[in-house]
Length: 442
Image (cartoon, rainbow, N blue to C red):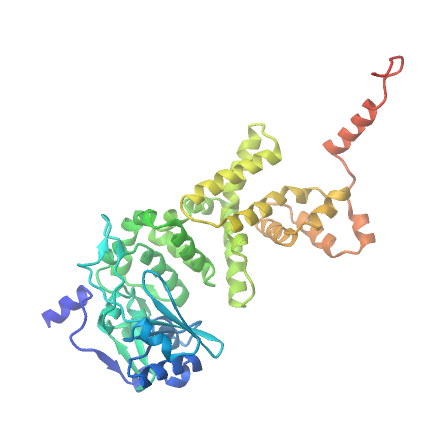
């Protein structure tokens, strides 16, 4: 009993593999996609093991349709590839096989070993290289959470459970395999993944899993920006972004991801603006409608741009140059943490730069804005600002009507042209002729 307790505390493999029959877990081979079931059958027929593993098994147990299927096997990649007509070996650090079958892409991975004593780590304990083949028990041990370490055998319809993942799912708990602090040092992104999965699946973080996160949050600074951006994007596009960001604040992770987000959310207008943006994004994801990551990041960072912009204008800087510099400052700050791609930042800048142009509702300027490539996205951004109370609702209503009106109505809607441009034209006309009584310049 003492040995069993020690193994559970330290995440060591169990002495006996737990195989749960279908009667106790409820998943049948008919629950799988035809492609996933066929890949496992072909592996079995060739003398290898083949299990559906990870998120697909977890989702099936929760009654959620899996987005994709991963297969784990004892066959090496070079043994898997010849078994399928359309298969491709990918990956440098650890080779995988992508099998294209019946319109699906099934990822097949060889069981991976996990020896924390021999893995190559940096001075902070982060694992740099541990990609070696191993046994199924080792493969389960190296996975992050117990609910992701479940293996379904389509042949016997048994569930193979090494770390109590089935019990945790039934208790609606997310628990790290092994010692949480050690696992977070090995890969700090596990802290972010814990928050995302808990929010997405409606699970509570196990107390031991949650406890070290706040004190270990600084480890996120050592995660490569590109990887951090990918994980942040998954979180924001999970369909549960609002819940995820609330959880990030609760566990103390938000400052390591969006360093200025805590400041944004402490501003009444900023908090309402971000909350509305996240709610709209979640709604679109759940409805399977397209979502623009550029729009979402533009919304998250807008009030930092707005604050810097207003501060520069208060110092007497001109409106548009002040906005350009404010955008540069905010994007430079975020670029140090999140590797937001140039394509996204270019779109973000366009959306931000078009906001002051919505105030120009006279002459040809309104028509030129309407014809801008990013007009629709920029208008949606304006609508978000109006809904949060940042700009008058009348401004958004004018543009909503103007963009769908006929030509006659649009002409009638245009406001009288005023401002510096009209005055400059008048001054130019006055200077075009020489004053009375004076000869014109040669």
